Amino acid sequence: MNKGVVSQFTSNAVIPPQVEEEKAGEATDIENTNKTSNTIPLSQIKLPSSQPRKYFDQAKLESLAASIRENGVLEPLLVRAIPETDDFELIAGERRYRAAEIVKLTEVPVVVLEVDDNTTTQIRLIENLQREDLNPLEETEGILELLALRLKMDSKEVIKLLQNKEKEQRDNPSHNVMGSEEEKAETEEEVEKEIEVVEEVFAATSRMSWKSFVKNRLPLLNLPEDLLEVLRKGEIEYTKAKELNKLKNDEARKKLLQEAIKDSLSLEQIRQKIKELQRKGTETENSEPLPLKQQVDEAFHQLKKSKVWDDKKKAAKLKKLLKDMQELMKEKPLP
Image 1 (cartoon, rainbow, N blue to C red):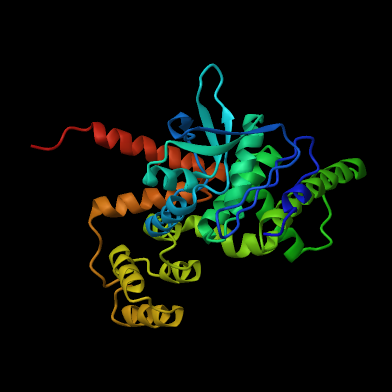
Image 2 (cartoon, one colour):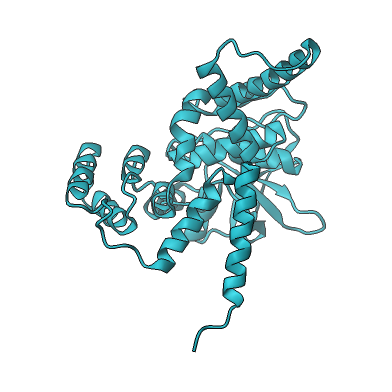
């Protein structure tokens, strides 16, 4: 990520500091905020309850720890004071923090920032999105969270905005909003302002356009949990995960997933193996059905991600089915 991208990222009153990671030690440059540099006990730094980064490669942590053991912590951690205590909350630099724990350092250099909760979250997200080893799933989730903050929406609303705008531009570039001229102008102006914010975020944090994000990245969020887990760990490329998702038989997919990781199968090899499995009938109606409990688990997993909640008629049917299931569970088993 080029230097200065964060300063281009926002035109809001609250300007997140410039944060960027470099190969040697995740170098950090902070501008436009009150800050002080210091050295504090590692024990006084507390991890936040939620962090954008979910997975840390142990081998890379050990490598960073070896570097810190020899050269010390070259770049300070970013922290902020926790009110009414002597402790500090970590804002950015968790990899350095974890490596310092491995080395058993007692003190580390820090930059203490005076920032509110919103800005703190944005700094964390921006730093995470600018990592060189960022995987596609982390990037997707991070961008959505950052957009939700900037647009003051939840992630589902952001997804809906992006999908609707992408579909509108793809299917009907000359789309006209229904209503009076004044209403149309206000609606179009509001949406365009939201898209401007979206484009600013993508220009500052990503190497793709928001349209490409909608087409290629949002579908990742609908993958089964086993595929999401290996994506977070960086054990498989997202193109391979999308291909593996074509296997609807859970056991067949999980088995091929482990084989793909163990043997470093190429995308083409995965495609060929999927075709072979389908030819053998793994994916046919003649396959041995899954146990009922597993079928119910899978149905609920898919239901949570479906769009049935947005349809009033379907939601009403779902409510009735739920009531039926609750009544069924109350019934005493037959002797």
